[in-house]
Length: 131
Image (cartoon, rainbow, N blue to C red; front, side):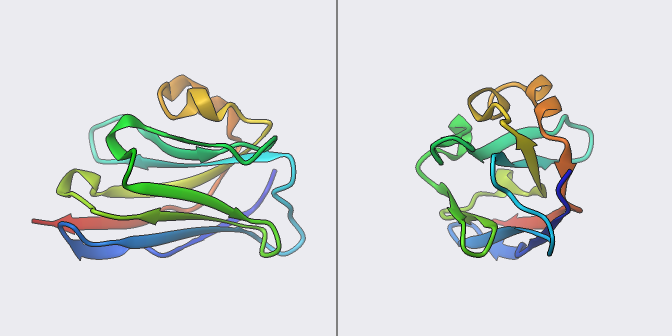
């Protein structure tokens, strides 16, 4: 497993931007790991938002965030970044990053059951978008 440290998050108004980062703790590596961002609001299932694959760094996004969110990998810093633009109140949630050895990104952003591929989870960070 990989120990993950999240940063970023906070409160913005509708249309604003935020950047979340997910870093592997010292001594851990994200090589061969797909890394995804997931979010959860109280009373609802955790859903996949964006994911970057281990094989070719191809990115996948849920329909609700396509065109607004960008996920990228900084191999030198062992970090995954999620740039969130044009934020909406419905984006309000606790956001978690998760890493999975050869995790299935294409499925993780559409099917909650695919989250089983991701065995290492960060502590979560709150994102609040006000109207």
